[in-house]
Length: 68
Image (cartoon, rainbow, N blue to C red; front, side, top):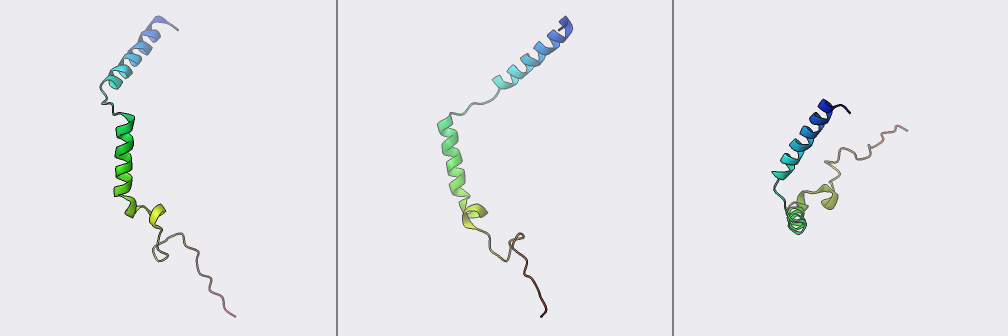
């Protein structure tokens, strides 16, 4: 690796470290509590928990019309 490419790579590393240093950290326990609270607040809108009515389900099996 040449000297100029090495300097450019190190500048990228420094920029990334400066970006990461400016981030606000949250404890895992607090993040988990926030996620749990969000899930409980929005559970009534989650179709995986409440299900989807057959009239509004776009993936319901189509009825077959047959003539005898």
